[in-house]
Length: 288
Length: 331
Image (cartoon, rainbow over all chains, first blue to last red; front, side, top):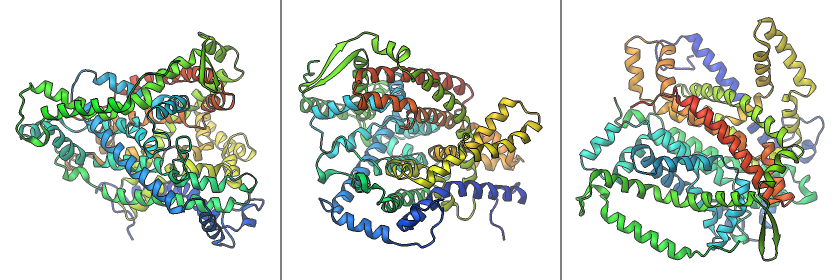
């Protein structure tokens, strides 16, 4: 049976096998923590604290999930509220970021205007600075514009997250200028060029960015800016369940269950987007 | 400090009006423009319009706090009931960071050395992994999902779960060089490698890499994604043409894949350096956080952060200077 279909004819069977070997090896290393989380979520309490620790589970049980459900039922506000908050913040933040950062990246890589280099240097600086130090001034700003305790305080800072701009700019620089010129000659406006030519041809880049920002926002706790219980995020609610002083140890199993549940959405998103980005360049009209 | 007089609502209105004016002048959607501005100027205006949302966010949530922290770093800050009070201490905070703080200098040097050893390993590993999962084979989506796991595992709540976990602590402990098991394994490898008469320093580097394999794998998730996206933006026609001319896979890799991906090697290097310096587990970041929030010495903490920031800036400047020399832009 041929496991690997060679992408070009010059590769030998030995090369295929070598590929397969490395794939399995690296894949195994990376899958270990996931396997471990799954096992941990299924372990009964006595197996979690067994010494020496065991990797796999001997008597799998769903107790941890049942316990988690009970705890979720006892929360102050209905648990669905936390779900809604997290989903809203994540979706709004991700879309806003991808669009705003891409727009800025587009003009930074393909337009010339005064102040362009200065602006890009500031973005790079922003990437490097330790956020602990800007935390307090940031809070003061949020307080001054009355954004404390609103969704805005969580979402809007992500719109201008420098990493996205940096990433998108590097990809957009690879688009040939001639493509944009021909669109301009055909009468397309700047926004149209951006939306219908540049964005489709860097689809792998922004799909990657979506995955990246999504998983950051998804696990964001936002405890500093949010006081009302109705506005808190899922990640925060879960961490309240888990870190409760002396009961932390008793809830080690539940924490495994939480870890597993929180992992599922980013993985699903990843699989969906990855299967969408194949062969984008083949159809985008870039042929030099 | 007196609070800055600033009406946000007013400001937003002004910005909105300004943007509206600009929109009138611009050519959205390819229709005839009403005003005739020179091409160059029009494109410059388009540049500003496209960039303004990002710029606003950057000014409010980065640039202003950034400058504020410069002021903080030259002051001693007392927090009272009426907000905070600053008393100027000149370079006192900086002086204290270098001369008085018991561990700052040592920790700073250590984390730089750590970064220098980690970055090449992470870049090479992630490039290798991205090439592997970019191949065509059955179950490719699953393989990619598995390679993406480290990104998910290093974030937020999952990290917290991992941290108070017994077995994982022991597992990563076993991989650390200072424990007995790790030392023994590395010892065998060391004798083997020394037999090959490589330079001892190089051998030490490889052994270090093997010892910290788990950490390197964990830190390379995002880089793999970026490389993977880069590999997919390379036009297949390039490969078709060169294969037609008789190039082998090996030649294709070095003459097409490698130059085309080189801008992203720069991106990934920058990202890896920044990530290794600013992730919350970095010892210097811990000093900064503890000084600010556990000891409430915010001015001192800002000073340390600024020293740290300038060090990162210097290192990145050197790296970018060196790497951009051979980055290839396809145009």
